[in-house]
Length: 179
Image (cartoon, rainbow, N blue to C red):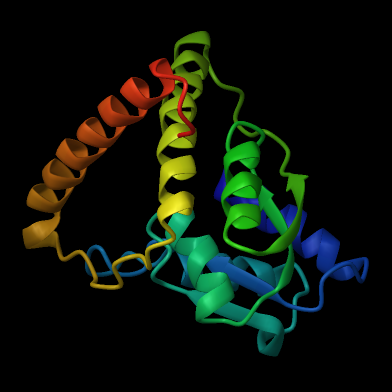
């Protein structure tokens, strides 16, 4: 899936629709794992000039990537390139954070099984609810890298917070107040 995203972004770059590429992802959660660096190597193979690549290793989540694109990298207009299931949330998040964006769907590879499609659909439904609340709050993301030794605790803490947040969102929506 990552390769398909890079290919779609490199094609937009080659056609002159983008001057630079911001490659954002997990580049800090464990030693030797760097999604932005891997994307950069592939983008260079696809013909993108190295000086036109910006790497954001703090994009652990969509909210972080969109927030950092604006506040750290100074991006105001962008083409968001991602998968079909993820595109609506990415565009919603970026727009809510003040970016002027359009979405570009990367071709789906590999095809998902029906079970995987159901899982991603449910995951995205919950993630959209969280994204709506996060963008309303407008808080900066945590820039602290998640280290391997702390990752388990960090994920458990995030799951508890997300569970509380989703429960709060559900109650607010039932009362017909804005989420």
